[in-house]
Amino acid sequence: MAPDFQAVDLDGKNVSLSGYRGEAVLLHITNIENPLCRECENALDAQTNQLSQLAEMDPGVNIITLNVRKNSYSLDGRELAEGWWNANITGPWIEDFDPYPLTGKYIDYSTLEGGFANPTLILIDKEGNVAGLYHVYQLGKGEIDGIQSAESLKSDLERIEAGEASGFEGIASRQGINYLGMFALGIVTSLSPCSIALLLAMFSYVMTARRKDEYLRKTASASKEGFMIGIAFTLGMAAVFFIVGFFLSDIGVFIRQARFFDLAAGLLMIILGINIIKPIGEIIEPVRSRLSFGRGNSDAIDEETIAEKKGIMERLVSVSMNLFRYSAFIGAFTLGVFFALGWAPCAVSLVFPVLIWLISQDVTPLGGALMLFVFGVGHGVPVIPIATFSRAVGGQIGEKYIAAGKHITKIFGLAVIVIGLIYAVRYLGFKMW
Image (tube, rainbow, N blue to C red; front, side, top):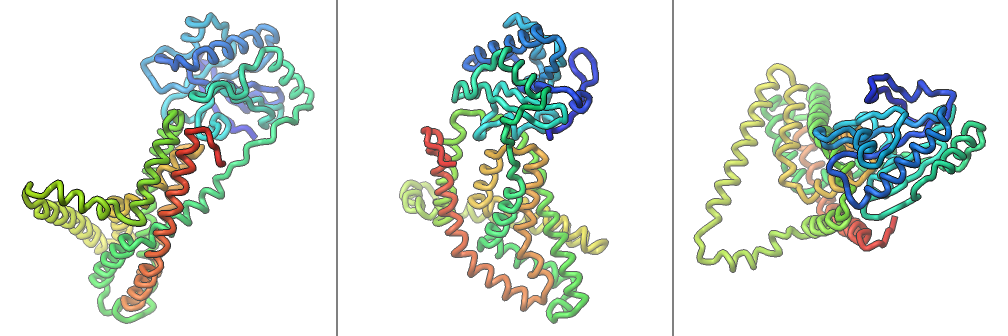
C-alpha cells in the first residue's frame, strides 16, 4: 500500500493520494531547485518533458509531483522547470520542505543503495498499491532505469487500469530486523568496561544515598524500587538517543547522495574499529611523547580538564539526587539523560559506528529516532538487574558484565572494521550487499 498524504499544491488545491482511489496514479518524486546539480540536469529535463507529453497524450492521466526542496529561497520547482526546459506542467505540483513530511514517507522507494534517485517514478494502482517503480537517475551513478518515455508510461498506466500490472515485486521494509539489530547493538555497547564502570559508580552512589540500609541487604521494597529506577534510567538514556536519531535520519537522506559517503564512512569505521580493539591514543602515545618532549608538562592540563568534566558530572548527578526527593522515577529519568550525555565521549568508538550505520539506512526521521531509542533501551539492559538487586549482588553482576565485555567489545571492533571495509569498497564499485 502506497503511503497516503495530504497537502496543498502550488495552485492552492488540496491534494491527497486517497482522493484518487479507483484511478491509477503516477507519483513523480524529484528535486528541482536552484542551484541544481549540473550532472543530473539533462535527466531531469528529459523526464519532466516526457511527463508533460504524457499529460498531452492523455488529459485524464493523474500525475502528482512531490518536489524535495532544500533551498527555501529558490523559486519553486514547477516555475524553474517551465522556465528552464519549457515544460508544460498541468498536474498537481507540491513542494516538500524540511523535515520532508511527504517524501519522507516514500524514502524506501526513492532511494537506491543508500542514494536518492532523482527523479523517481512510482506507479500506483486503483486500490492504492504500488504497482511499478522506476529509479530514473542517481547522482554519481548515472541513469539507473533510464528516461521513461511518455508512450511507455501510458502503456504502464493502461495495464494498471486494466488490472494487469504485476511486474513490481515490492520493497520489503527491513525495519523490523533493524530494530532487533539496534537492540542487540545497544546490549553489546553496554558491555564496554567504560560503560559498566560508570553505571556501577553512579548507581552505587544513588542507591546508597537513597536507601542505604535496605540496599545493603536485599529486601522486597528495595528491589521493587530499584527495578523502577532502572526502568526510568533506561528510558531517560533512550530519550537522548531518540532525539539524536531523529536529526541524523533527517540529514541522512541527503548525505547519502554524496559520492564519497561510502568511502568516508568506511574509512572512519575502520579507524573506529581499530580504536575499539586497541585505543589509537595508546598506539600513537610513543610518537606523541617524542614530539611533545621539551614543550612543557601537558599532563597537568589534562588532569585539570578531567577534573573539570568530573565536576560537571557530579553537579548533574546532584541535580538528579535533588529530584529524587520528589520522585524517584523523575530523578532516575534525568540521571539517565545526564548519563547518555556524559557517556558518549567515553565510548565514542562504540557509538559512532552505530550512528554512521543509521545515516546510511533508508529510514524516515521518525524511524531513525525509534531505532536509536531501541538502541538506548538495549544499552540499559544491565542497568535494571544492577539497580534491582542488592549492592553485593549488583556488584557481582557488574563484574560478570565487565569480564564478558572485554572480549565482546573486541569482537565488535573486528565487526566494525569488516563493515568499514565493505563500505569503502563500494566506492570502487564492489557491492557486497
